[in-house]
Image (cartoon, rainbow, N blue to C red; front, side, top):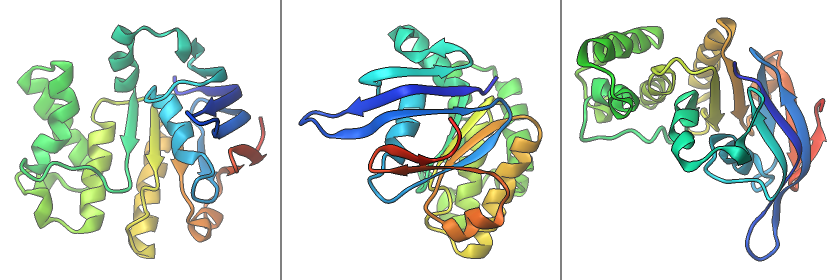
Length: 222
């Protein structure tokens, strides 16, 4: 689980602009890699294709051998439940507790209250925030809010984590802590793909770098 293949993928938006052009690469099961490139290079579009928020204009996107173009509307929610997504601005709900923010994907999936509580507390424990479950996210620091976002991303026990600029709003020390947290999930077999422009941080970590330039693959193995 967690294998991603892009086979000559092009994404063309209305007006004829290619956000991605003939992109081919593979993220192996259990691999952690960085996706880099200038603003507008196509990083977010690439992640959206994996999440089925967008569909490829040409080529194939496969996750665990399944061609995403062939998934019907009814299968898309199940597909997304197998992917944990971490956003730059963490997209937390400030009218709910930390516990309820993390529980949200499980409530949508229909888990019973006992299993839901067990999974939420396990996820909060993994990110070091078990003692903050009753807090409101607004009471937390930026780094803690991002940890809540990661707990929410992993509460469904996904085989793949996608992170879109997860350290974009954090200082270097907190950025390193967030990357170490993602490495811990990778160490137990979760595939991780991180879009980031923080080259100084990326260069300190020993993971493959897939670079995009103007929608094309600049480097990285196919």
